[in-house]
Image (tube, rainbow, N blue to C red; front, side, top):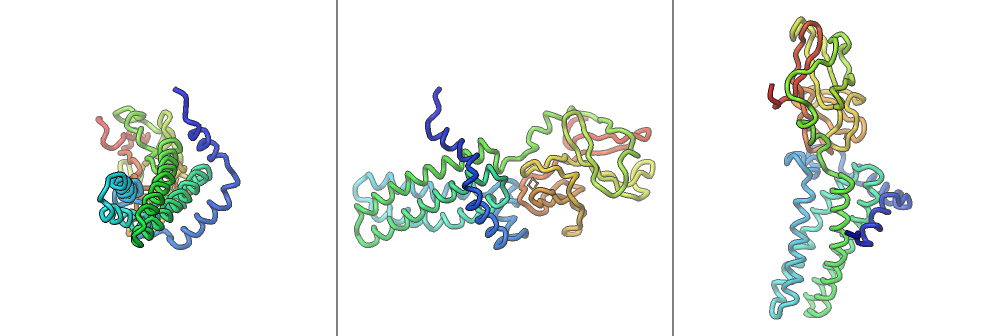
Length: 300
Ligand code: FES
């Protein structure tokens, strides 16, 4: 089936380096205003376990589409005006969640993202003008401005879909892990090959892992405590073994070197975003001096 011309145009956005200054400026401002912390985590969707922005988008878009339906039917001016207002008011917190995610995307994603943001900003302005016209009793102009706003919001929505489903913004990078890791225990080699105190890389078939062995007499054979996580950051795939360790909220955590997501070394839970999905954790044991791992939750 031939693709729509709009699809080719949007594909080209990913390579549009001329958008980088605008995208970089928005990203820097958002990071300065919203540093890593509880509020920013909530805006990313950390408590939900996936991004909150797609959920929020349904409110303004739903309100505006409903207003457009009422606008083509006679006698619904008051209800349509209320829905337009709901859309404009809900667009603001929705945009806040969107720019928070945007600030931690990669360059190609931000090129699409900045046009997506501009489109939705223009749509919101058109709907605000639509409400003002309706409020003055000029329902004809209000409807025209509303239809224009819906068209621009539709372009913004298309770009948002491209960003998520084609460019993978907001998806969990470890979703396929249970299929990639065979069930049972697998050797990663001699435990002495993983020196104490620093995250080390390891490979289980095609799956990259992060191994952290800590000094002590805990564990089997006095090999200390060993934690093994998927090495691919659930946010955008950063290599966790290149990150640094820190104590956060009383637990030992690894910080992703790409955008600073903080994961508990023990549980893999997200302590701070932008990641929203936890890191898969492996069970460990030592057999005859070799470190063995099994994916938590997998069958033995
Ligand atoms: S890749 Fe973005 S925080 Fe890890």
